[in-house]
Image (tube, rainbow, N blue to C red; front, side):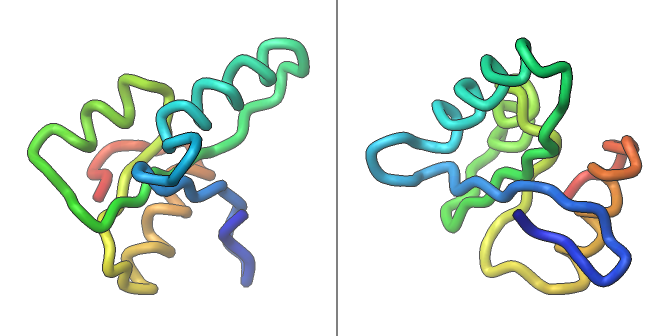
Length: 91
């Protein structure tokens, strides 16, 4: 989980994790949420951004996207967006 200091909380997932990538992890989280009614805010992170990544991340159930290296100020903005429900102008 990422957040704190007055920010809401969100889970950061690396798109290219070994064993289970971020897309698979997000799908598993979303399946689990179906039985709880709760929603985990998920921010995708990648060190190798490619055109269309943000759209693919959002289409697969992630709430926002950020590329590495991650600037603290930008991360704070993204967390604010996903925890406030505003996904416009995502990174």
